[in-house]
Image (cartoon, rainbow, N blue to C red; front, side, top):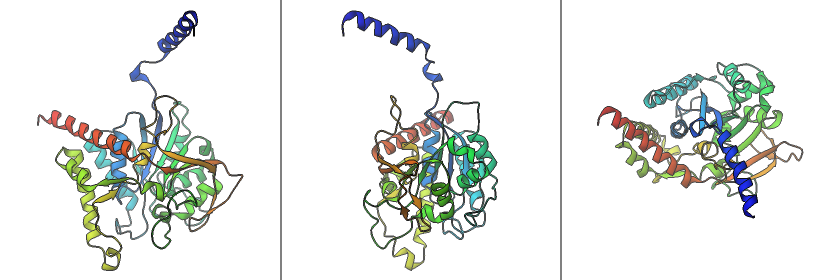
Length: 346
């Protein structure tokens, strides 16, 4: 490039930069509805805390969702309400305000179930907003009951959001198969009918993080224990994990025998942060993680995938950048606790 061309290009670039909003005014990558069983596995609370501490995304609605009936994580009949309460506790600890609503307490009764839950209208409203240009991502770390109910209530939302789902069985040829006898993936078992609605009937774009990918999100429990003395957020998250580990220690012997003690824990919901907030600054995308694109298969009742060559394109993640994710998570938790210490004068 000669000097004249360079100067012309530079002038156009500078003019373009001058017209851009200031750094603090840049739009978020996306606004998020975060949907999770916060009263179950505490990985959802780690994900939510991390997400809220990442200003690159804007969480506009949090939905607490149910588990399986009688789940050892929460055997009560108010699992979704307990999940919402957990999210509110975390928001209070962070000094933040985001709308939180509990979803329904039960899975879909049938593929034709068109009942609504307390969260349905809030999800539809968020998806159909016209007052923002930020794209909407539905970040789901458990079952798909609430997004299925919302799509049933108003199918227009299908083109207005993207679903990132932590869940589903392994896809043949796309990574290692789970050791041991075949098992249906946990999040899928929460509401398999809802998953069938989303895969087989809806037009929602899906980014899926199946079991073989989210199992990569291993942290050493010692790293989480080290956060406990750092400040209130680290102590809270460590306490939630220890409470869960305590429950595992009291499982019936037949179940406990299948859960050997290890030095790690799977924070399997954390890819929701990786794939949303931790994107590249130029040509934004989740560039540090690997995926394949394929037509969305039809989903069988036990989570088996059936080829559907004419299906809408979906992403299936095969590797998640765990290093980036956990460096970001721990740095932000420590920074938040440092601010808390400064504010208290400690």
